[in-house]
Image (cartoon, rainbow, N blue to C red; front, side, top):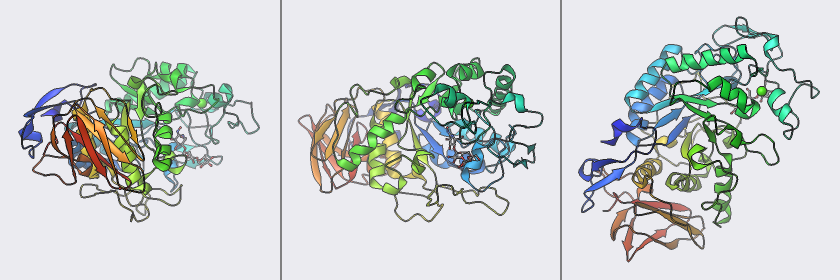
Length: 488
Ligand code: LAG
Ligand code: CA
């Protein structure tokens, strides 16, 4: 079974018997090679105890390779979700759970074959002008964190009125002024670097596999490199560097440090869904303004973009499934699926108890997409049949080359050579599209309707492959996908 091999760092083909994983297989192929999983899931503002359960019941079985958590360190006491992005100390103690719960989560996820990536907020501390006490009781002032940092450890850039970043065309402002009043650490300083490093080492001692580096763009790449430089081999570093037109600080500068979130990917993916036009090289070919595939972490949306620039989110239902289909079937980058909670107020925190602790939630029984989420109800995207089916398709597609996209009216699709084919219809009318393929002739189950196997039969439509063509008949605004193991 491939499940035990989830920690493999890269694509590692393993042979599985069709009968084991794809119980519904009627005829050949008797064996399907599957790649080790590489897909991540961002579980935004979900408590550690809940993530532990998700790893066991949802993420592991679905074949997710890693989970990105919200920041685990002590933070300011406020109801908004973004309290998590204002560190008060590096105690692993937050609205999402205790140190012990964090450690238990990492262990549970590990048992399920899911690695944990922690969101590391290391560019800054709080943005509070008044003194206060953090979630774990630590006293602090804007530029004083007793036993951790004092005023000399912060940048006071002196370049703008309030020392706030005003001009993103200035590297110096972006990296040494304050991001929305957040006390900006002097990450060039050896002691500051050592203090941050001690925090990262502590999380590693609890078993995490790596870090999202929050606001990496606001730290010189050399500073990030110095902080994470000699971490144990294999520690994953995912730098968040929002690409901006005309900005001097680019994602490419951070590639030497590790992986980089490539914001261009979602920006390119969304417009075709609304205007119905797919064209190269936007979705394949040269991909301008993208870091090299091996360095790229790609996403349809995340906790910031779903509150901002993202044009496709959980609210868009089928269009969100289409976007995830194109991303998960693609051969570019390492995808991270996003799962948060429904909201109308962009600041609203996750549902919490009277003490402010975020409430547990389970996605074990959930499905989607849905249009009827209550405010702050979890979207549970990791449990959607489409996402689970697409993870299966991606594993089968493995490292097969992505063939050129076929654009036909409002429909678009492509093959992962000899392994899988996907097609989407962004139009308002049903449409048929034929995609050239080297898949063997036959009837295939659409796995966007849900994964095949485990005793299930085709949940959705079937797709016929004959004479080297896969013929998809797609309802308006839908996606479908077939793979070598989904022959009915
Ligand atoms: C990030 N990546 O670079 C996070 O992904 C993003 O969610 C963080 O912003 C930001 N950088 C800082 O880590 C979030 C909210 C902001 C919030 C900030 C600090 O999007 O709205 O700012 O976290 O909590 C809030 C207020 C600001 C205020 C600031 C300081 O919205 O008006 O100036 O707090 O008190
Ligand atoms: Ca900075």
